[in-house]
Image 1: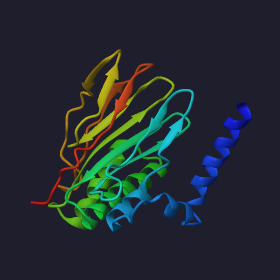
Image 2: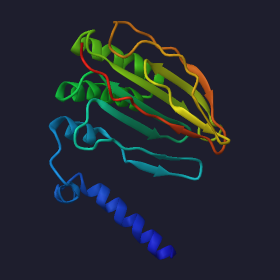
Image 3: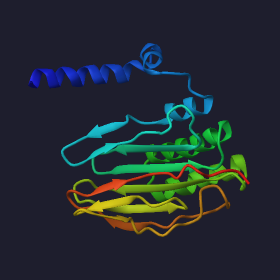
Length: 212
């Protein structure tokens, strides 16, 4: 059984890596063609599942073939887990480009060592600069220390995650600020959060943001 488990892991890693140099497996698994907006957003996604002794994380986009501005991202560091979800206004290609700029800006800031407050501030600035204040994205960002479960959250006008704790479900209490990209010079507020062993967080998007 241990040999089979190791073989399964190696095959899974190989298939994931293969997406970088061949379209063969991607063509096989698709039942129909993706819209261009959906193609952009799927390419933005991280590995869809990750598991360690301290935590497990997984995500998906539904519907898979016609996506409208919704995306998520995460990054695992030595003492920092970052999780973000964004929902760009509108549908189609413009929404995909808006969401793509938000996610890529936050990644760029994160990889430069910025915390989620700086990531949200810069994403908001870039969206406003490139698209104008009538185009925006909501977002929810969480940064945790996996060893302690403590961290901070930023709510840029997005529905807060649902917290499952000891059999009870409630919304994570993080007051909303304005969405990303509406006003120049926006600075987001950090809110302290704390997770316990056995907790589960469900990040989600309502998927209904449309242009005026």
